[in-house]
Length: 278
Length: 261
Image (cartoon, rainbow over the protein chains, first blue to last red):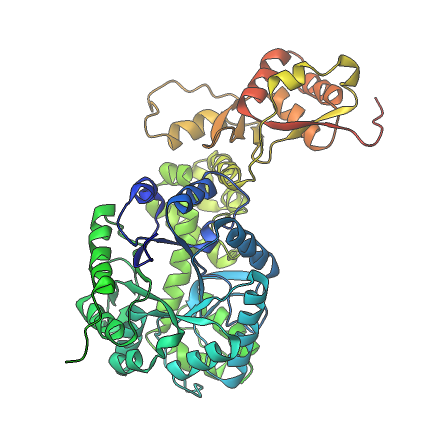
């Protein structure tokens, strides 16, 4: 089997085309919570895709940064899904959503303090112990400046990864959006991520806030990957080498062929022979 | 700083009225930044999108704008209790039943209940359906000591007030004929998932009583009695055939404890 190169977020309306897709290196990622069900046609579809392609499970609701352990039933459901699908990658976010029994469908921010860091490490270890595998932790988009941050984001992610044994999922669009919103340099973040920790890369489109415009970019996943994000991606891959790369699109979903063309660009970059320094 | 306190305050500010100050100084500094609205909007949008996806027939009846406004009111009062949105909105039908602006369409809550049953059936566990031959082979003497075990996807509901199957199917399916005459009768709905897709069909009063009895552990004989009591003119042969074809049962199961008859 060809090694996985560039993949696509799998949408129910593209199931048939995804199943038939024969692009070399293609793989598909789903939000784990959309498949943590007891049974039915959804799960059957995912199993059919899995019979043909590598599948990655991307969690959005384990709430690793909440000041509480992951919800036990959800962790069990995720473990059952991992066992059933045998995903090529499993990932989650450095964020919280479930708290005191209520789920908020978003990736909520935390101050980067020593206490939060330890809680996230504990939670990741709990998840990795239960799944019996390494997970990758994704950097979310940032919209708020915290006076309470005790370290920068890269330092925080690296410390968590080194101490919990997890890998990183670097979302290049989130780096771009966050750097724009909070006024730092995205290329410096990209350059600072240790190559050995990156297990997966995410690329997606973003939008501008309807009133504030480009001063506040929003991680909308509703548009093609922006040129500035492609440039950061090129920069990253040139430094760390190829990594499984996902194109995410969750709103305004175009025909499958259009996503496949966008995916082709990342694929081409990943299979490019490594250029030797002249 | 105390992270739990921060998360309590942040969570409260997400749902508070815009402009309402947070008692937490940390969260108040965040709330005053323009980016805080991104989180407020995303949380509400996620909840509303999920309710819109889970109640498509309600949306067809009231329109997207009304549905999203009602979903927003519901979500503010009741966030998802599970870290998945697939089953969000269990209480949405009863919310609609009590929601003043919904009173113009008195059958809206019942239609919402059918949407809910569809969602539950869609994600229920897989199981083989009971074969008609297995039931036919059961000796009559065992009818009082065997239970028809329900298929995990089987759901049903009865409406004393409305033809809920007709109302639901006419608004759920885009090729239904909206001009077809409507009989304003009391009606039930049977929702099953025999071979992949969810199947929804009209259901008689006696059928509802029979499945209620099966769920509470009554024997086949006891369940049939319940069906006859609820609907003395029920066509039992047709009812059993409907249930078997729909895949409402998964197995025959001997009763462990004695049932008094």
